[in-house]
Amino acid sequence: MSSGDLAWVLMSAAMVAFMTPGLAFFYGGMVRSKNILGMLMQNIFAMGIVSVLWITIGFTLAFGGDGPIIGNLAHAFGRDLWDGDGGLLAFFAFQMMFAVITPALISGATADRLKFSSYAWFVAVWSLLVYSPVAHWVFGAGGWILEMGTEDFAGGAAIHINAGIAALVVVVILGPRHGHGSEPMPPHNLPQTVLGTGILWFGWFGFNAGSALAANGIAAQALVNTHVAAAAGMLGWLAIERVKTGHATTLGACSGAVAGLVAITPCAGFVGGYSGVVIGALAGLICYAALGIKERFGFDDSLDVIAVHLVGGIVGTLLLGFFGEAAINGVDGLFHGGGIDLLVDQFVGALGVLAYSGAVTFVIATVIDRTLGLRVTADEELVGLDQTQHAESAYQA
Amino acid sequence: MKLVTAVIKPFKLDEVKDALKAAGVAGITVTEVRGFGRQGGHTETYRGAEYKIDFVPKVRLDVVVDDAQVDGVIDTITSSAATGKIGDGKVWVTEVGRIVRIRTGEEGADAV
Image (cartoon, one colour):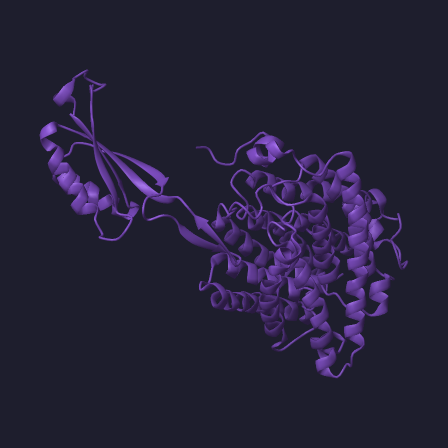
């Protein structure tokens, strides 16, 4: 790897690492004040547990060898990561930050009621049994989804669909929060959510432009697409919100920007021109509309991980089948004369991730629920996670 | 001696404080409180879902005054806190049994 590429990938790894604390505050502002430390802790803890698992075995399961289904054990316990110029180490570090944030995304759906010890087990097992194989399929040499022709620039399928469907499965098993639907649970500190959005937005430049794995034109294209999609996602969400409720809200601006960022993630290095704006705006509109899904089916996705990450991930993954441009990075979608092939590959790839992640998450969550119990007791839930799970309070009277 | 208590709109606090100072009141105690009266609550929107917020933020003032000052203080508060819109708040008066200045031990009118 050239020194320029190495510098950019290392910088990007650091930027993606910053996204998890950003996500913690994005979510943290939206929960009630008795659960803020519980939320921050679930995110920050993912940085601890997943990173150690990643160097122990997670990385090699995802990126060792070139089989279709799973990696190998060649790099277990950090073995043979030194390749002379640091290129493999930079890649290892960059991918580690993806592995950290993916299970952390789920914590928004299960907010306010997940027992911490069970969360710890869930994240560890999920990271190895779900994230590593899916990352191998989508990003790893020889992975079946990659080989089939599905394109996922920075993880629309591997990260957002993957975490989104897992969030859906876990909240169905977990059940709704005490008082859901009957008592208001407004966000306790939206300024934290705005701050978290800013950190996520900034980190996303590393996430998407870093996924070029080089300091080149594709990285520049991905960075521009990322920013304009976030901007258009914000405007799309605010427009529909203003029409439907009469107000453009701060939370709506943040949610729309994140929806745009999620949707551009798979497309970032494959589309050009005005496509990023269109993809972002569509994501803002569609993800807003998807907020109604949870009411329709009666599950309690506390912070709308399904509407934003699952739906946003699907929107972006499929839209690449329309907007891909070979002139940018080798693949043409439907709108650029590539026919329907790419769209079909995108659809099948998304379906593969949905099916595998949904099924294995169901098994993991069910086993933990039957043994340790996923939920805190009703009393603990009423008192709040901060005091009952961590013996701390965020705010002193 | 009387304790004059007022619950007012938070943004009126500075005006009321200045008016009371000008009227010769020596000290006030301020507390941020929440409650509802005829104004009721208001609605807030989060991701398209509307929430009714029942308790409205208000500021509570406590002023201990000499009997002779009571009517003047009430007039000052009511005129400086009024906007004419619903939710302006209330003023009420309570009898004070005994009052002591902690530093000097003075009691009664001297301690006000």
